[in-house]
Length: 569
Image (cartoon, rainbow, N blue to C red; front, side, top):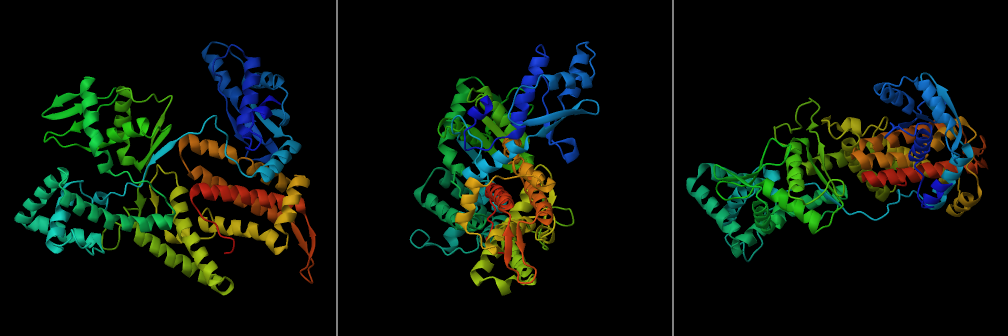
């Protein structure tokens, strides 16, 4: 009962967490002397073994053996089971094999949780206080698109801009293709010594903030920004820009702070900082007096801690930068900016995207693939797929375009998120647009189908809302029971992805939910129709509610993954 009072009434109960509490109490009562006893509870894959399993007894036997107490895991399991406190969700337990404790849940309890989900909607776990999360991602700097450092290439671009559009200060230059513009200026930079010299002078003038050069820099940034914005619009991303220049003025203060605390060493004219436990130092000032990524990343983390007042800071970049961030975080702790027990700072690294030949993803001519080209190709292929399925005959032109965008962008995002982000993965349009298997195409289709069940049976929204308040969600058929439990695992999945920032777990769960729903739908009729006339004879309202609950959880899952489902597909 206590646990239910702790629950915010609207949020979904995390069954796994609740079972851990219950078993935690049982273990403490049974073995009060044991410090931090190992606590593991997992959902059972096979129904015959019950719904969940507590595997603590084996690990506890190991711990006790190390202390010279020899007790069999089975005996430990028996003692844990004898001490399970009164609770609202366990129907019965049984001990299997060497000491697994299988847990059977009370059907009534699961049914009540499903009703509460339908009444309150899918709610996230409650927090004692709201947390501010800063995510450093996307990093679309102009230098990245061109693969060169901040500074030099701007000098080059500005010198070329002055030559090509001498009146750029009064008339906005019509640069359509920044890539081509960059290639022209790079060619001159490589071949013409005089141009190279002017480019370097432009860098100096830009860094000393001469107004005409700042204006030229802003013009080039704007052209680039427009390009990036097209990508963000397709992927439905809203971003607050914090470019490297944003932190420029904070860097001097950061260097001073490290110097005043005596943390800086000189090394052949460079200023370096060694953080404890890290073999590589940070270079905060180069021998020519310039700043580095180390300097800007230190300025950025300080700004996020003290000015943005972040509780959680997550850096999303390729795994190649893992060591760099490890050292930056260590230096920020060394100087006393944050305590990792209070503020969570983490690098979420990702692997490389590979072509179908398992080598680095490149175009036929060997260039890097541009994301915008990929998104446009996705749109083309998704329309081909929809037409191949004859959807252009049944959907209005407006619905067809909605479906095209949902499938194209959903599939590209899902293909990326459904792999463990730490690993490299092979990019394949054929695989991601396949409507069989763990793809967005399959999930979007499954979702649209679930949503259409009520519509095709002419059940009004109001009828469903009344049913939610009055109809019990009975789970008598084994497939109903399996689906009900699967729906209620959602909070456990959210907890896991919050802990490890690995989103493929959520993708796997949504796929499992969709396939579990299909098993249920194939075995349990929701709407019975007359074979001759096709008229609806009977509606099983309780099963319609299971359809609703499945769709509600899927919709929230899509929302978290940034995928937009459509009503008609």
